[in-house]
Image (cartoon, rainbow, N blue to C red):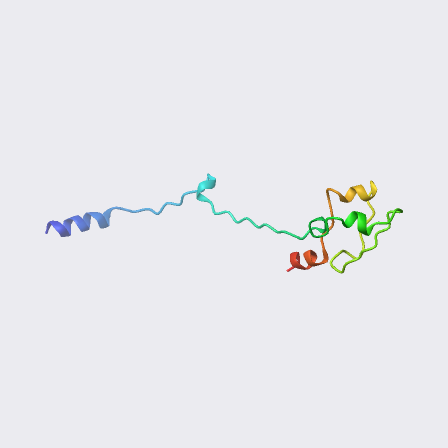
Length: 95
């Protein structure tokens, strides 16, 4: 009889579900998406010297080089730290 009385007491107690709010990052799940593309200067290290004329006209000599590049305010030097993406790199990042 004692077992019945314990279960009866437990049935009379109200149990309440609790929802914890996540206020710290250690309880959150984070998704990080990283995209990478193939830079012209990594594939063609001499691309500035080989593909620009003295008049700063761009002439690509490989199908993986972009067919055109925009003129930069500071000329060819503008591409030293910010090169374009190769044609293959463009295809890879769009998929």
